[in-house]
Length: 381
Image 1: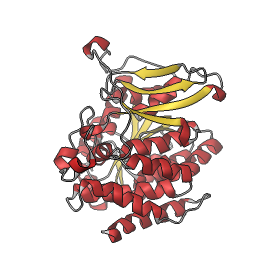
Image 2 (image 1 turned 30 degrees about the vertical axis):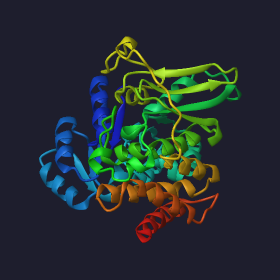
Image 3 (image 1 turned 90 degrees about the vertical axis):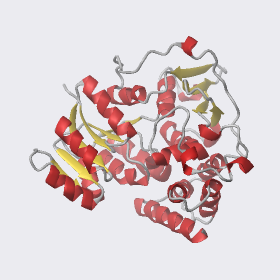
Image 4 (image 1 turned 30 degrees about the horizontal axis):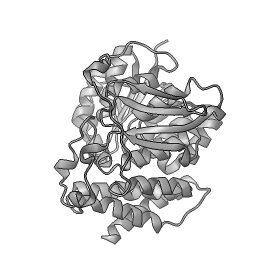
């Protein structure tokens, strides 16, 4: 039986690579969504002929609807349109690669309809982890990680007999473009410099998050929810080559790692084909091509976003949501040239500290906290 999938965020890096995997596996595309890129989404609609499509931007959606009027694809708009596509009854799996907290509602909607989730939207769990995991358990839905690090952990854990055998999780980090630099060297960093990632091709927001190492802090929070472990069971190691994607340590001190070339189509495919494995479009890993694999302790002083995220998930409740919301706003302000690189972490820390916490929260609480954190960043300027 052909797998039927909906891809949220189909015009981005993960979305387009997901379509590569879908093409190789012969999957049917039920729905495609994006934020505002009508031109690319039109191309995808004409190739994949999905039943549904949506653009979050109302004006762009109107233009797309006119452009594809000669097709059978129904075009929807706004957050409601994206949620409709996430809930499309014809799909059995929803791959969510939306950037930011905008991915939370569609994830909850898809889970509510009993869809398995291939999750590339880490902010879903960072901001609303308790809500998402509870609903997934109630609905018997699988949440399969797409991020290369979490996919690696997931694969390593498959060999574990019982949870008591796990001693720690080791997240690898590339270190971004500013590895080895100190704070004073980052004072005048430009947006162009921050967007030059050494190993991965990603969207602008995530690439800046990698430069500040906020991305790794968010991944730490995501791992807490995905694998039901305490923050103190998660270590971070800087691994510049991005060949080892993450590791786990057993209670007997043996360590299991997952390796592969830095190509997102490996974890994307495994999330879509799990528990089966198939040939992928990714080249074979030849270790002799790399010769040396290196490992370093992360610099928590220079890249303070790591510590902010660790503290936020230790405190729990809405603190991770506040950290994420403040970062999304500060990241955007940096890309717009309105703040300096080091101000991102400073604003995230101050906004998170000022957040009123709740250990038990609702979706409305999450959305209010996210809005408050963003507004607080603006007011702190």
